[in-house]
Structure formats: C-alpha cells, structure tokens
Length: 210
Image (cartoon, rainbow, N blue to C red; front, side, top):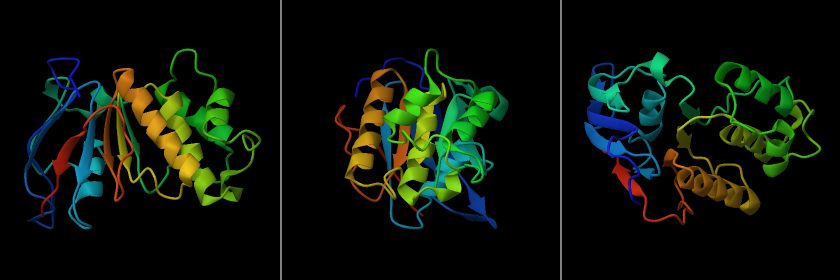
C-alpha cells in the first residue's frame, strides 16, 4: 500500500512493555500511515494484545517512544482519534445496541452524516436495535461492537481478533469495513490467528517476538 502522507499517523521507536520488570515483547520499530493496514503477527503469548492495549493508552510505555502525527503520543491528544476493539467488547449488557452507540458517540462524537439505525442495519442488527445486549448471541454482540467502527470518527482502528465469534457473513463484513476505512484514508492495526481477507494490497507486517 502507498502511504498517503509523509508523516505517519503512528510511529513506534524501540517500543517495549515490561511486566514485573520482564519485557513482554522485544523492542519494536514501526510506522503506520494514513491509508495503511498493518497485521500484527506472533505466537500465542508473544504480546499482540498487550501491544494493542499499549497503543490504545490502556497500558504505559515501559521503554522507547510513541509518536502520534509526529508529536509525542498523549492520551488526551488522541482521544477520539484511536478506537480499540478487543476481546472485551466494551458494551453495557443491560443497554441495547442503540443505547450503547448513543453512549459512545456522547464520548467521542460521530462521523458526519452517519445515522445510527443505518449503521445497525449495515452490521446485520436490523430488528435488534432495542434488544438488551445481554440477550444477543456472541456473534450479534460482536456485530454491535463493530458498529462503533462505522459510527465513530476515529482515524486509527486497533482490532484484536476482530473475526472471533463471527460466521462467514460477519467475516465478510469485517473485511469490507477494513477496506472502506483504509480507502477513506484511515489506518488499521489488526491481530488475527487466521488470514486477514484484505484486498487493498499487501499489508505491513509487525512481527512480535518475546
């Protein structure tokens, strides 16, 4: 893929994270530009989820530097610009998909011209908009979380195993969302045990080592 800007959205320089004074992964150097997808590769326990949580601001950098748009990464600066979707889907189970999305947009805003009901229809939740999330299947819960990708105006998506709990239609949905976001100038870092069905070109690969 061709970078659309000279300054990367996100840059890591000798980035590492320690747990109980032991490094979780070897120091990393990488850049992710607007219009790029990066695939995080590594064995189980190699630190893929830890890296994504670090980039989302949920963990503190132990060593190295993290830059956002060429400046030192600060959580306040990146608020609303980085969207993390992990194993814990970040939904209130007693609220409906519609109510969860309203809560998310209240915190982070929404994309111009995007309508909540249209988003829920696109992810396959038409008819379930007002059902409490706790009553949804695992796949429907995942789709409700994926709806945030369409609704929130984040430039960078951090996706940890986004294909989990999805059938083939859900997998196709994720691939379509990836392609649309990158084509619109967004960027994605994704971890996946399976192949990522991205057709926008060869993704950058970030290899994790303990």
